[in-house]
Image 1 (cartoon, one colour):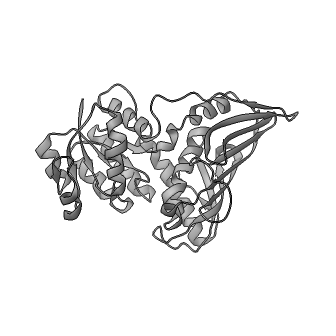
Image 2 (cartoon, rainbow, N blue to C red; image 1 turned 120 degrees about the vertical axis):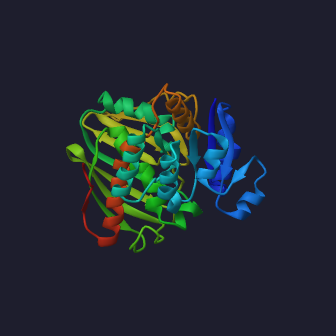
Image 3 (cartoon, rainbow, N blue to C red; image 1 turned 180 degrees about the vertical axis):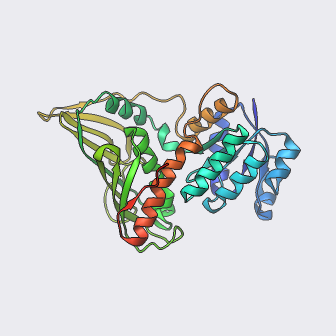
Length: 324
């Protein structure tokens, strides 16, 4: 049993409380935190505190989960880590590489588990596709495309790069085992800052080894909805690997050989899906029996890709991804 506090009782925090935490009985939430007096007054699920330090001191919790607004991520992370507690934080954990590396370094110096909720890594198709790529199932990769299209107000009415593209940048790194090199981004509407609304973008993403991904992100227009991870088409010398299909089928994985024969690939269920799986890995890491799905120190490289995309959207130029 791991004693936790949850920080954030907005809509996403309440969704965690209602739908994710009950899947893991050993996640014992001993306190809840929200800066809003209205949110604290409305919540009836347990003892609620106004501040992180107060909650940790009063409960003795050793870890925190923080489904809070993006603008609060860095401040909340700093508070939790400085107080000596392990942390699972929502993505993107920052919008710039310097802050990401600073916070990851703080956790490392204190010997704390600091994980990021990159929950798309816990879709069932991910380990299957990653294994196929590692085994070179379609030979040398020559072309990759990724399309995401859904009518979703949370993406349409925000900055789609910040809200969603961070997932796909992280998946690119995870699936191909390569790091970002440069990004060219053309947003649907002008983007000067990360707070500017844009419902989508077209991007060229360059990874190590000369691999280029054509990436289209759209929350407008008529068309069948892709699954949340998108529809991936990976073309190699010996075949075409496709993951995802519209409408909204994230379990579809197939290989088309050079003669046009299509073979479906079995996609086993995962023990826990998406956010619940991320939380399971975090709890195991806190208890010393596993590794988090996406450690902050590694996820800083996904943040670097987001930072490059935002810079490119602002300048209209090909932007190199920060490396270290």
